Image (cartoon, rainbow over all chains, first blue to last red; front, side, top):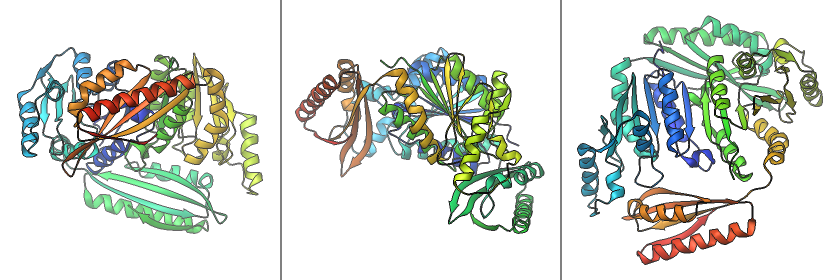
Length: 269
Length: 269
């Protein structure tokens, strides 16, 4: 079902020094999950042409259908994502009239009388062949660009701008390509049975439900009793079948845990 | 100064679906920063042998001095980091007696009378040539392993276990290799001058202070006034010189901002 490979490349020094937590990555991971897709890889690179270029080449060589870049589209000297992509694929950065129009419009709507400086113009200089994606929450437009068999998107790193462009443009393009895939997720709290005792059962469970992803998250001991959360993540193109299979799976787990003298509670989705 | 390349590879499906935010990555980024090092790349891969292996090979081919893996050392079926590394470098997983001793001791200290099941034994099966690193907060030991010219560390994904092994073992090994590098970081809030107007000045500033990393983080508009935070991150092996240069840099920024009619405040480190 998940034949499409999607990779995310987040660009930014602040992600590497740890001064910013990469919540953009988890937001995109979650948003793609809702569409039935799972990221195959996340790469975080510095604001450097060689690093951005090698990460792009690697994602293309892994035959990714979609490659999403986040960060480095702004006006400052270290915003070099588009420059790096252009160099990497041997294209020029050219003034994109639609992008320029979007930037002017953004300033006009906010009644900001700003000169079109070199730095502002930079945000409309896109790799040849790019399609700008409107940014309703900030200045720098996103872009869409086909490279080999991959469709590449670039989004600004400011979270509300990134989210807005993803929701208004990218989601639609992805859904058009993949159709609708349903997804259900349950979190089950298990008490009284340590992870290492549970492991053989989980392995069998995973085999019986190949359409699900099963993962245990140990939560240590609480008043001498071991706790862990079991994550169940199931996908299917048939909604009813999905719900039936998930219920069946949970009751299998319930039976096993009660048999072993443990406790179980579904705690969330 | 930063001739050593350090890469982090975090393993875990939950990081790709966005159900877990990668705070382990930011913690390691920050901890390395305190030692004067900056991560060159962070890669997030799924619990799959092929993905783990390709990410390792790529990090080695980029001549990384240190490669830190986080995640996938536990007892369950999807904890496959060590198995994947062993396959990748053509070594066997062998029972490590020191690791087994650490696991037994961990159970004994907590008065847990648990049988040594296949799953528990698994945590002591390390790629040939590995040195186990004691885990004082959980069962699975970390490991240290030389591959080509890279030193590879593997840590469990449970944050308190990962932090504990990093602080007690890895930090020392890294400091022995690199010596002490001092670092100062300042955050400066600038109001009333938009990022795009500030860009040429920042570019010049970066040129005059090549030992610093300068980055502007736009924070939008507040009551009609633009706000941004300027991040200054400077390193040197001479502590006094570092402090003098950073002060000099901040007063250059102050002069410029006041001249342009903006406001400035140092808001943190």
